[in-house]
Length: 116
Image (cartoon, rainbow, N blue to C red; front, side, top):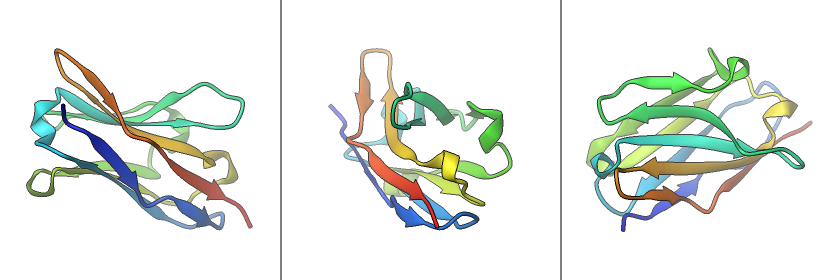
């Protein structure tokens, strides 16, 4: 089974940027879609952005549209989430997810804290 490992989280000031990476142990095309989710303290996990194997993208919340960008590098088996103009409400644990016809895989999560 392909495993996913996130990196790139940390502490950033409001208005700053971060790029999260999700490295897969195998081909990202083993998944029909890969996505980023986030879970803030006391809240449910929710979709941030996804990219299908065909390259189509979708953003789960209006609050991130125009600020976040999901992309992938097939040669590196990595999916990225570029986050710009970060706000305190973006503070959460960000999880990478991959879905195939036979399985769903989650990474361990990476913490993003937006604070001055």
